[in-house]
Image 1 (cartoon, rainbow, N blue to C red):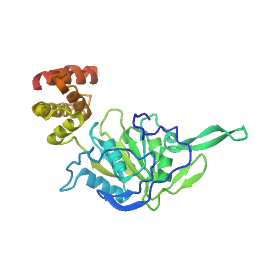
Image 2 (cartoon, rainbow, N blue to C red):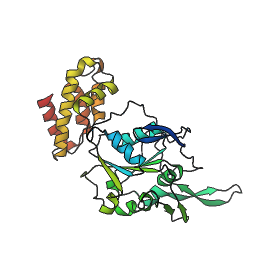
Image 3 (cartoon, one colour):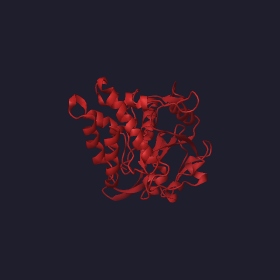
Image 4 (cartoon, one colour):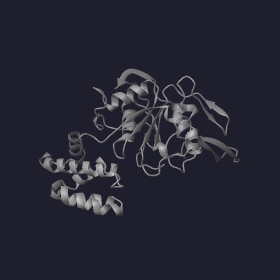
Length: 316
């Protein structure tokens, strides 16, 4: 996997003795128990106000539902289009509850060893070469009581997914066996699995019914327009005097997202892109239309450029 976040660790660098997550405290975030802060290096750093809690079901938010499921030791799959914050929600919850996070992005070239770990040739104190086992992200999370984040779960093939079956059984019967060493591990009490999925996205597979049944499914969508406007201002630092422009920009993004869901557009438009557009509007560096063209026309696939340019001309 790749990633610029210092708390997202490469799958081939899992050496050393495991550090367990902290013990449960009396506090909760949402419905999820906060663990003691033991300074674990895999706990992400995310500001408390960095994630917007979205209305979901009745009077409950997405955070309410996901934390309730995790507290009940359920596996959770977050489903929705790209850029709605699925992975960020998992990082946010780990940060707020002091949980180590181990993340891997799945694809058809992901193998069981990428999850479990591998044998590694090292030099022993006597100078001879020996092999030792190095835990992968799944094994580390199981041992330490961390959260395993499986990004794009429906992009993995069936053989890779099969490695997860036993560890995602009910809380009392789950286990993890490492074929290379014969070790069987009973997962730490705080071990949790969160997956993300982009349903219908090109290059993805249909998960089989038995595997899907191991998850509590939670749908995430883009923020309501008024919340997205607030988020763009908060993250870009743009003056609130530009609110009419940002309202138009968010409305425009909604039209592009409709085009994406309808198959007219192959490139999803995310809130991150809107923040970058607003950032380039600061101090009059670019006007709304110029900043939007500069960001999106360089970002979208070549065959989407004509439609995006047409919509910019019509709506902005």
